[in-house]
Amino acid sequence: ADAAKWKFRNLTVDNNGRPWVVAQDNTVYRWDPAQPMWVNSDYGHTTINGASKDLAAGADGSIFAISMSDNARRWDGTYWQWVEGGHHYEFNELAVDAHGQPVGVGLSGLVYQWDANAGWLPMHMTDFWK
Image 1: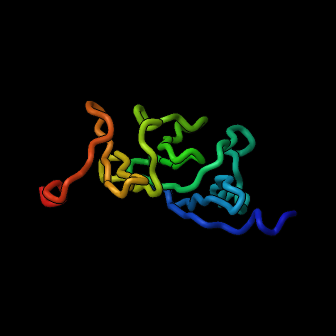
Image 2: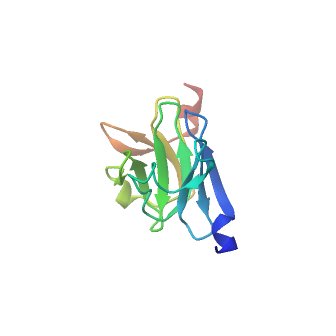
Image 3: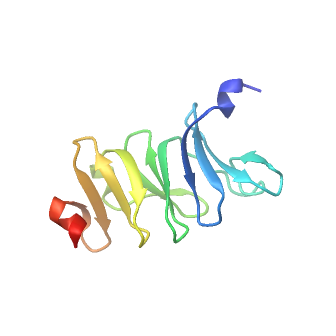
């Protein structure tokens, strides 16, 4: 086995306490305590396909990633789905707020928050103190 495959560079933990990581080769893995080992599939059924740069988990169970083209995606349990409008925004870091909505630092340096009705909105300092 390739030793670099098991060196990780990004980490998040889902609402079930399972770590998700991005390996050096950009493959996404999730810890499976039943095996116990790092897997990139759900018991052989669902491959966590799609190379990623960063991961973020929400308290609601959501998992978001930054694609290799810097766009935001959400794991639907089977596939990575583009966050609507996400292909128009490029990110270098993601987080997830208490409501399961992604927040990202754009390549521009601005912080954007996803709004289901309006898409990606830039956050201003006053937004942090509401």
